[in-house]
Length: 208
Ligand code: 5GP
Image 1 (cartoon, rainbow, N blue to C red):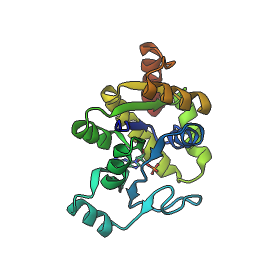
Image 2 (image 1 turned 90 degrees about the vertical axis):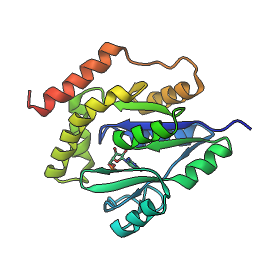
Image 3 (image 1 turned 180 degrees about the horizontal axis):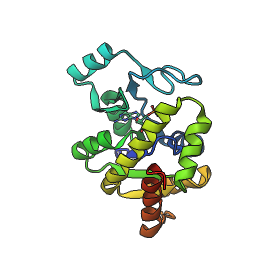
Image 4 (image 1 turned 45 degrees about the vertical axis):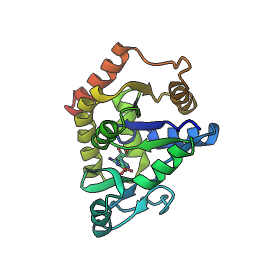
């Protein structure tokens, strides 16, 4: 049996990666989402074992020690990591596995598994991003500011990604990602569009 494909989906906080991934799981067969471990507190609507495995810093460090994580990274004061066992088991069964992770962890996975498909989700504009972060209501203004600053740092990491998908509409973003995976003419933004969005986010963070 052919092995499944490993998909890395990254993008700025608030860009809607989670919603796109949910849509993919709902719409297409043969995708599994890897549930990460994190030391951050659950948001009101989040459930342990569904959105994340919410664990303590001690438990997280034990997992690192026991080599149970495929990768891990620190993101805005908290640890996040991908449990290795689930990913290996799914790929062996021929299932495609989605990792929704930030860019530092993404690079580590790509180094270990070069066949992984690297996808970066972009907002249509910087304003969309800020509005979503504020509208989500789950972070205070200081955390939102940190996440926006992190977005600017992450514009630099965009160079490591193979595909860019603009989240102007959830269904079409999910469909585009499936087309990337199945290699069937995905509708991708031009290089100029990608550069413009990147510039918009950098300018926005400077208050321009
Ligand atoms: P959030 O706190 O908004 O759920 O996630 C913050 C960031 O951590 C997002 O960019 C998300 O993709 C990333 N992330 C979630 N799980 C993991 C993981 O297992 N490893 C890494 N490296 N990043 C993760």
